[in-house]
Each structure stands twice: as structure tokens, then as C-alpha cells.
Picture 1 (cartoon, rainbow, N blue to C red):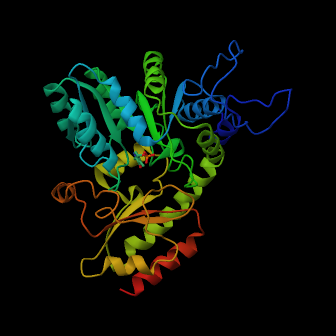
Picture 2 (cartoon, rainbow, N blue to C red):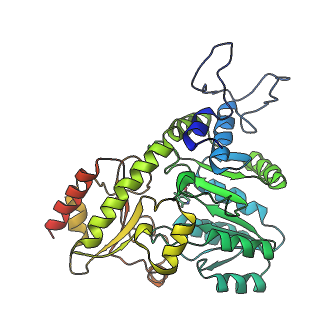
Amino acid sequence: MKGFTTKALHTYYKPNGEDGAIIPPLHLTTTFKFGNKSAYDYSRSGNPTRKILEKTIAALDGNKYGLAFSSGSTVLATVTHLVEGGEAILFSTDAYSGTYRYIVNVAGKQGLRYRSIDLTDLHIVEKTLKEIKTKLIWVETPTNPLLKVADIKRLSILADKYRVLLVVDNTFATPIVQQPAELGADIVVYSTTKYMNGHSDSIGGALTTSNNDLFIRLKFLQNAIGAIMSPFDSWLTLRGLRTLELRMNRHVENAVKVAAFLDKHPKIKKVYYPGLFTGEQGRIVRSQMKAPGAMMSIEIKDKYDVQKFLKKLEFFPLAKSLGGVESLIDHPASMTHASIPKAEREKIGLSDGLLRVSVGIENSADLIADLKQALSVL
Ligand SMILES: *Cc1c(COP(=O)(O)O)cnc(C)c1O
């Protein structure tokens, strides 16, 4: 089997004899002359630049088919249309805030049945599957922002037993770190906004699958709903993917060092990083992730002023999003997870002092020196 970067560079597109362009062209056309060889007719239904991206992401996941969307959120919105006839969707209590917002406040209001449960507890999962007729399980692993990991393989065994689809959001891990299809996921989904594009300059999403019937239905939904990735964003994301493996290796190398530094620091109460997990969570990390990723959350000891620390940082701007080449820091309680009610937030262990760190590809010594000086003023 070919390596990740070879696949990222050489899937589907081949420079042709006519113009020989090494890099795939950006096809900005909305429509196509009737009767063309590739049977393109309208860019919502299919676009050559998007198609190269779709094939490439599928190849990286080891799946047959891929579809690209205008955002990670519209992937969820499209996939929930697979749920019909009073069946339910299960998702995690500490899901991405937009997952919660869409399922509870949009689809739920239109009648979609849902249950939010702890997907790391397989007894609860099985009990729920027995109680409520379920169409799909939507699992994000590692989760945002506490980096909890769910056992994809065991979830897929349960999903098969109850004839339920397993959808894995692989945004935090990427295909480099985790291969959900190999572990039994029916559909793998991404916000390509994050590591996949990796340069914080394009909002997008994608899904991949090897199930032919599912793909036909999802492609129908992609066209019917129309939340497609634009040709330009497809082109940018393809460019980003060419360095995905190189970037992830560096992200992980830096994150391991940053986590080790923070974990030992006397002003830090706790570091949530898959690389530091022990017990059952550690076992899952080692069994299904090739590396611990580059996302972590930290809690500064209660007596210190979090805002003061944030203001002192030079290389960690306070911003939403993650997975770009540059490091970012986020304060979930006031930013990314503000849409989750405070009482709910506390129930899932998301304190007001928690900070989420996306470790970039800067030189690790500079990142550590920056964190050190910002902690020293507290
Ligand atoms: C960002 C994110 C999303 C949503 O993606 P958008 O591209 O922002 O719509 C979904 N899942 C996870 C895990 C994310 O990090």
C-alpha cells in the first residue's frame, strides 16, 4: 500500500498530454458542455477540482468514496438526513459544541430523535441501543476539549450487533494518526477547516465511506442539500493535504514536548493530553492512535489569573479553531463552548479555568519559552 504523502500527491489526477499541468487546475466553471466525456453537468452535482479532493481524502482514509462539503457543520447536517422514520441519533455528552447545537436546537426541533450519552462507557451505549431504535452513532474521538477517547473498534462491534451506522469524526486525529475505517467505522467525517487544510484559510468539511449504498444516498443528499465545498476551497484543501503527513509529524513532536513541560509545571493543575493518559483511556489511545495528536487542554491552578496568563502569551493568540500551522489557545467557557449551558458544561468537567491549546509547527523551544514566561508572571 502506498504511503500517505504519495497518496496525497498522486491520487486520481494525472498531468495530461494536452497542457501537462503538474498541479490540478482550479475549475471555477458552474456548468459544463453537454455530452462531455466525464459526464459533468453542473458544479453543485460535481466539479473536477472537488472530485480530486474527494478521491484524495477517501484514499487517505483507506475508503472508496469521498464527498466534500462547505464546512464540517454541513457534513453533520447532511449525514443526519440518513436518519428517518423516528429513529434516533446517539452522540457524546462532550461533543463539539456545534454538534450539540445542530442536533438539539435545529434537527431536534424538526423532530429528529437524539440521545446524548457517554460514548466511552460501552455499557451505557448498549443499554441505550436496547432502549431506543437507533440509526447512527456519531462519535468524536478524541473529544473537544477534554480529549477523551472512545474505543472505535468496540463501538463498531456494538453498532454491527444492533444494525446501527457508526460515524467517526476524525477531525482531531486526521488519517495520519487514526484510521477509523480500519477499526470498523461506516463513515469517517472531517472539518477540513482544521488539520486537513491546515493553514487556517479555508472552511470546509468532508466524509468518506466504502459502503456503496451509503455513498449513493449521501451523494444524492450532497446534491439535494447543496452544501458543497467550493472549487477554490477544494483547491486550497488539496494543497494543504500535500503536507498533511509532514505537518502532523511536527505537530505531534511539538505537542509531546509542550505537554511534558506543562505537566511538570508547578502552576498547572492538570494537562489533558492523550499522550499522558493512563488506565483504560491510555489503553484505547495506544490501541487505536498511532500518535497522541497535537491538541491538549490545561487547567491552571485556581489561585492564578487565567486572563493575565493569556495576555502575556506571544505565540498563542486567543482564538477559536485549531489545527493550523500556527499555535492557538482557546478559552472554551467563554468562546467555543459558550453555547453549552454553564450547568451542562460543569457536569462534563469543563471548568471556567480550562484552556485548550492547539500546538502549531513553530520551533518547540520558542513555544515552551513563551509558555514559561507567561506562567512566570502569575
Ligand atoms: C470545527 C469542528 C467541527 C465543525 O466544523 P466547521 O468546519 O467549523 O463547520 C466539527 N467537529 C469538530 C471535531 C471540529 O473541531
